[in-house]
Length: 388
Image (cartoon, rainbow, N blue to C red; front, side):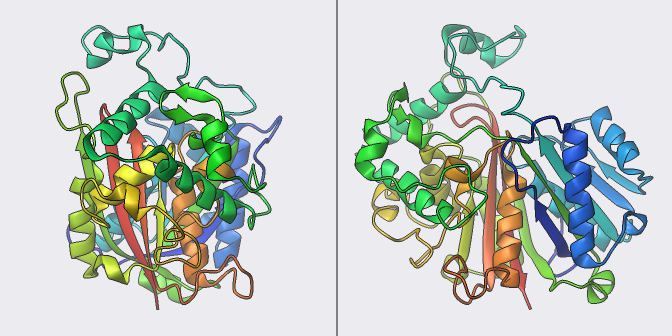
């Protein structure tokens, strides 16, 4: 992707406040978010010449039509929950290449309203025989089960304790209590987590993401456009992507795509792990967080359990993480990567200044998304953002 450092800035970031949107269509959710994100920056839909959306094909074109866009650049890439981090990187690359100057990225989902299945049943749905899923999904090894397998493997190999995983949920809920839009805000304890219903051993219900409606939008522009915007620019400093394949017969279950995506992101940004003031890490399950932190390089392989103990990931800890409450407590409409970026942008701009939710002196943030399933094929997208 080449050097993207400070070649593009995020100037608008808006998250839909509702976790249950009712009759709103996904297009309506995206339109509302797009309007508000552009409004933040002092821009209009007429300024947009690039559009990106995880529709995975014609749906992105339909959304563009719905919004009244005729973009010079269109990207439909869908790699699961990390898609939007990839979109920002692709937007920055397109801007740096002179293909466009203002890229709008949107997402909308009514997963909760439509009561969409999330893969906890015995049957994984239709399976195409040529794919590796054919050896797993028909026998109940679907979404939650795959994550549980990675979690149990980590416990077996490294002695990671259930209490250590549970602490991730506890800290995240503490952050959700400061977010008025979060789906769940009541405090929980490690004991509460371990007493909650087992979903797929050793995963408990309070270690699994919520299912919500939601949406968001980001506006990425060239430096020249950013200068005229109403908001403080948040710069793309570095980005990397990675992919893992093959579930059946996998030898290394606990090294994930983050191990591939993180090194180029850090190298491009020219920063070290100690420079990160905020980490926004995909948290579909507690194991997603722990495995990500290890593969991102914040701790050594097998030391994730000790790393997440205590207060380290709290807003006043050494590495504040998921300060919006994350997917475990705030929202998870299906693909949560856009919300990692939105919260990082708000923290870097100082939107919460004067409140307990603001990370102190937040200058550099890392966002890492995971798409697909750990233990099977999945994507990892890492981005490092910074402010002036």
